[in-house]
Length: 166
Image (cartoon, rainbow, N blue to C red; front, side, top):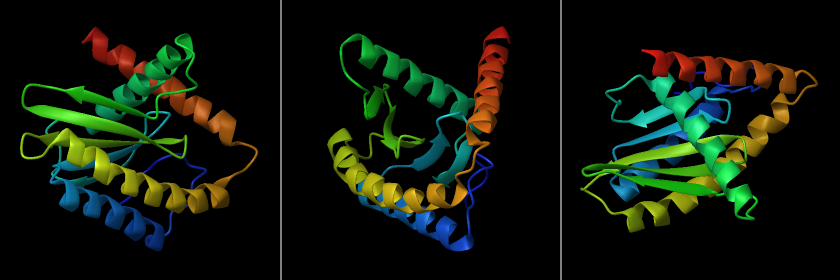
């Protein structure tokens, strides 16, 4: 179920169902454990699959910060952006992909699958999500959106600061 996101978005039941179906198919076809959608301001939009054993709000903030930092790194080497990122751990890994330049799809997986399979299956999922969110974003555009999103960025930065103070 879609649970939040920028207030300028307008999700209906059919939007939520469509997004969850895309994410569930991705998990099934890739044998990944969990998929999270995070907006670029650090707000968790939805989680599908195994529920993570960590603070999802903090994870969403850090994911947005990670993607933002990597956009800056891309710029330094002459790239417009990196459309995907991969973080490999000893037993757990995650693959992050841009969705519509406003969301980040995070897929968590372990040794039960391979990076190659996740990369292949995520392409179809991103294409489907891009199409779904084009409709959602098109319905929710208004003149206040940039100011509202700036507030979420400020909140995300505060959350990151809080995490490192603890």
